[in-house]
Structures are given as structure tokens and as C-alpha cells.
Amino acid sequence: MSLKFERSICMKSVVTAVLVLLLAGIVYAESQGFKSEKEKLSYSMGVATGTQLKRQEIDVDTDMFAKGIKDVISGTPLMLSEQEVQETLMKFQKDLAAKQAEKTKEMSEKNKKEGEAFFAENKKREGVKTLPSGLQYRVIKEGTGKTPKETDTVVTNYRGKLIDGTEFDSSYKRGQPATFPVKGVIKGWTEALQLMKEGSTWELFVPSDLAYGDRGAGSVIGPNATLIFEVELISIKDATDNKEHPAAPAAKKPENKKTAPKK
Image 1 (spheres, rainbow, N blue to C red):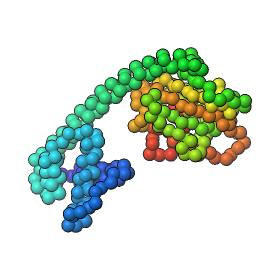
Image 2 (image 1 turned 30 degrees about the vertical axis):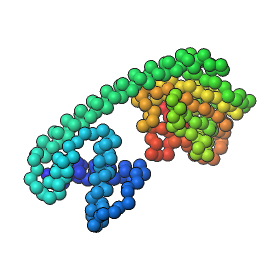
Image 3 (image 1 turned 120 degrees about the vertical axis):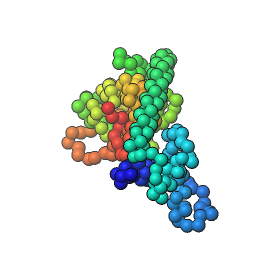
Image 4 (image 1 turned 30 degrees about the horizontal axis):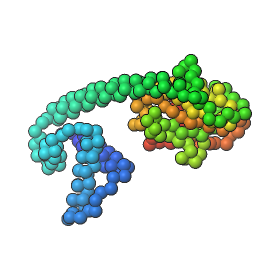
């Protein structure tokens, strides 16, 4: 088996699994009964790989899985040629992608129906206004300042959640407002901000086509998900003000520092 193939199939998967496990904060039981660090490491790698397989709902024959690892490490002749291994894995990846696509489609249709039902009921609520685009909003506090234009940059505080109440982002929790261009965020925000005045706080009900659409964002915002935001428009940033404000993390890349709900 080639060095390149070994690295791509074995080391990358195992090391990635270990890192995922550690970052997820999984706590190992007290390491009793291990005769050496080698045994402890070997077991930890097995747990990490198994955790990743279980999380991805990948059904494997654990005996054959262990044999494959053992044969490679010990140099025992493999039961399959390198080409057969590659073909098997390629077929698996293709089947997995098809399964994921079907799962995404089902979730997309479910979210779409739930969103439509939500908006139909929500528009009956006192104080809720519906715009031609489908965006709904409720004024919590009306400000008296200026109204931003599409070309402006604004400073806001906000929190975002799904219709089931799951919160996916909050500048309040970070303790710092978010600064971003009005035209640099999702369509629902761009539209609403140009109707708000400085000092206002609105609750926005954003249909999926004005948010992240059928692609979703990250692991929390699914395809065609309806989003709810509480948005406080603090100020319109002066073009001559070079003071940097920290950007708010967006849900689609939770592992990095991000901006407010981007397009």
C-alpha cells in the first residue's frame, strides 16, 4: 500500500478523530488498568475513532475494522488490493453523500412547511407587521435617530434563534456589539435595517428565502430554516470613525470569528 494512501486513509482519519474528540470536551474515565502510555494512547485513539463513526452513524463491523488496522500496522498481506480498498471507500462516500442529500431534502421540506405555518399564525399577533417580501417584524422600542441607507455601516446588538427557541447567536452574550455594512448581511436584515431608526429595537421574523435559503448555515441553522432575531440598532457608524468594533460570530462557521448574519 502506498505511503500516500496510508496517510490519507489512516492517519488523517485517526488524527482528525482525536482532535474532534478533544475539542468536543469528551472526558475519558480515569485511566486505570493500562500498563503503559502506549496502551493508553491506543485505547484513546480507538475511542476517538469510534466516537466519530458513531456520531456520523456509520455502521461498521468492528472485528473487520480492527483487523484492517492490525494488518496494515503488522505488515500482514491485505485481504483487498489498494484499488479494491479505494473503490470500496469511493462507493461508501457516494452512498453516504446520497443519504445525506436525502436527509437534507427531508429536513428542507419539513422546515419549509413549519415556516409557512409559523408565518401564517405569527401575522395574527398584535403588533406584528408583514412586508411584501414576506419579512415580518414587531417594534419593541422605537428610536428617534437616523435611518441607515444600504451603503451605511451600522453598530448593533442582537440575538438570533430558531422558531423552536434554539438560540444560535448573540452579541449580548459576547458583551460586544457587532459592526457590519447594511448590504453585507442576509436580505431580511438589509431590508429591516433601512426601516429602523437609531435607538430602535425590533423583533424580526425572517423567512428562509431572506436568510440562508436551502443551504442553511452551520450545524444549527438547517436548510429553509425560519429565523427570529431581536435587533437593537445602536448607531450608524460615522464614515470618518476608524475605530474598529468586533464583529459578531455567524452561525455558519461556529469554529471561527465571524461577522453578523452574512449573505
